[in-house]
Image (cartoon, rainbow, N blue to C red; front, top):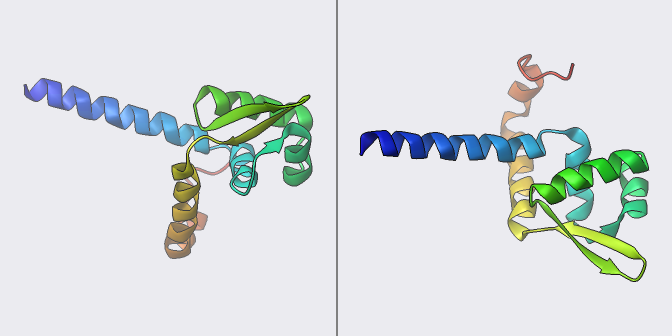
Length: 114
């Protein structure tokens, strides 16, 4: 029984880590941030994020596969949206947490961009 509990905790930790890797890219965060306000088409995401169209499309594919974003066809355009309101809440909570720990995050050398 104890082994099952340990395995389950390990699986939960791995799922959490996988979820946070989805949020760990600045381009994906920019896309998610833009989608927090309203559903957008690729060309609108390119305008709002200042990322290239191939970059936006590539990251949208990742976000779609991970279930963080959903899409709906509107005429000839596909509009992308946050798949759950909890994602918007999570991003807002992260901003509130950063208000408290930003100095430490900025000083941290462990997760610096390469």
